[in-house]
Image 1 (cartoon, helix red, strand yellow):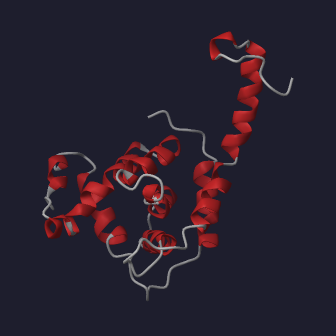
Image 2: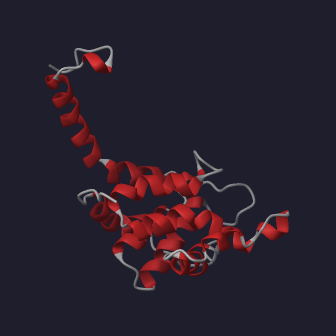
Image 3: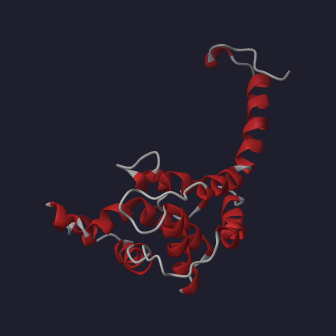
Length: 184
């Protein structure tokens, strides 16, 4: 059997779902490849920035690596804005959803909330609340998210910064996405 027998999921058999599970497991193993391929396409920039989305991501990850961050946080820094292309209004949640099965609760929370925390640097210029992040001030990962934004994200728009290449981060991405999924 190369395709399922059903046209409605409720009519699927055990054999159908075993077949799909086999294909899904193979597909999941290719996640790192798909992510790296996607990242390699981010060579264009959103109008107005001095660096491409890829360069911003590489700078953030390079800074995390140089600061001695864990492999997980280096990958989080690399992928924190992957949602910009398809989910520009909630890019943080998009990136966090991609990472969630493979990273700790802390890393997931930081990536998920970094968009709100990043507003600290610009919202007031657009009539918004730069302190919107303060609604999380008592959260156990608040300070970690502030540090993520301050040390790696907000300063990674520098056309003169010497970042590492995507190829340099490939082993980190492969390591994280080959993990057994977390159950957080």
